[in-house]
Length: 456
Image (cartoon, rainbow, N blue to C red; front, side):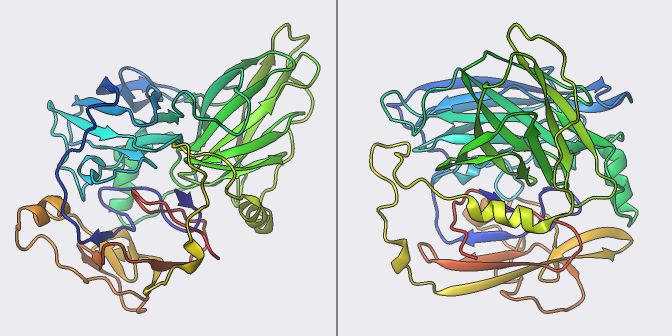
């Protein structure tokens, strides 16, 4: 799960990043032979498109931008053979998918060797006891700025009740900010010690202004799985004349709550139900940036069958710089403890209120220029990669790749420095983590492979 307070880009050069190291050793691949096996092939190539009217190089998966949706059922085993046809190393991470005893398949540099140019690697993972709306994206070399992302949905097994009626159709909607420049140019800007300028626009499923069209029939209800796959901007989405009922957030069913607009921060995925209860016509789906000057916006179309006309009238208004609006939205989202999860046992039966927290960690993000490059850090440490992925170095007892406890539990205010920062933790302990953002822009933290409780 994601929540908005720190960074989102697993950048090869410039990321706020450290590894929370759990003292536990596991086998490389865990696959349940009794559950279905789905074999997928991803061919990763460059291609040229013009989503904002300017021809640019992007990353395609199987010739598609965005990449193909991954559809899975709870407990499915997925074998995804990724062929890297780029001239540089490549990795894909499966955002929100829990790698239970299987973090070797997570697709970030801490756990996987990059796939060399001209080579392939098969990710083997099981979506054990999981449901929900997620997405995948490349985790190295600022590749995310070039695409390579796609939707990832996990549906319940047959016979497992879902706390809302089956929708007439189920749509993936990937939204995100976008630049005119390719990822190498953006990466070079950071390497020269500069920060990135505001993006050029917003994409919806790879389209710029007057984007994709979603077909509906009057009186039916549709599910939209909305993910913010962008680099830095929080986005607000609304549908002209319609409301959105939030029913699921990244694998957790929520108490159904109706919104006229939703803030979706970088990395977040929301699942909403939209009922086509208006006169048969076309309506705007509008997305705009939050907390920016100027405000960027774009539209798509919700088109009724036998529509009487094109979308018209004003695009629905949205909050711009109102922070309280976003905070109130976050406070309004509640877990649906009466709904079944992936297994037919009632959720909310665990005594989390009796947990004894044994450690509190404060993590503060900051920015600085180091050796002429724009760098970002946590508790004054800016992460640099070792020569070997960290879990492999640990598994094979390779000395000198990293050392434990080289990032403090609390901000020090010291000058930022480079290190392969690794924070140790004890297996099965409960830790409270406090995120502190003293900078002047929104952040989104990602705890890779973890679920967590937001308590304040």
